[in-house]
Length: 323
Image (cartoon, rainbow, N blue to C red; front, top):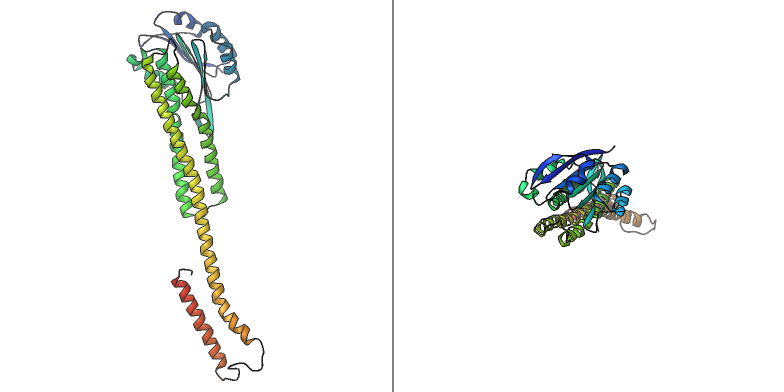
């Protein structure tokens, strides 16, 4: 169901008044005024209404109605259409909530689909900075873009904490199938996050180069600041993916080490058991003439040799840390 989160007119960094959707065109046409409209789950009726008022391009409306495209920035004359995604965890499942931005001279329209953090906080921050809000539409674009990027930081911190816990778990316990599945599950999430963050670098670059009437050249450093944050997120993502890979590698190395220790123990005990087996095999050949067969203490002597040999081998393997 469509919900108008907020619709207001701003001029010289201050809010003028709240408006209805049908009043946007008239206010946007006034000099030094711009309209900021925020919608939640808009339908075709609302989008077509806005298209008529602000002369939104048909291709932009078509993409808006289809949804589920990749993050992108498209320009249509002196207007732009942007698609962004915010990550949201729902029952341990990573979901990406789409936001569409329409911007042009005199208006900024945001359409949010799903339950991502509300852009009401962005509006509150902007209204609390009248000197920045005085820049107009380009500052609102920057504020919305920056807010979307901020939403990725908590998700990455969550994955970082989980991977650190997993590393400690793998160091203390043998790597199980469940552990491998959990790590692979996190790696898939990280790959999905990268898919939605990577295009943001190009979007920020384009915003710094656009020559639009409503984008002031003095706002370009702010878009560059967003780009720097995106690049840091990309670096953090690379580090998290390496952590996930290392967790599996550490588990495999430790498992290999455990198996090697077990194999050494088996080999040591096999060598110890081989000594009496060899002696018993020799005296079990049933030849008539063999040393000490007629000796009164022959049996005790052989057992003594076996005992001393086994104890010597055991002590030697203990010294080598094989047992």
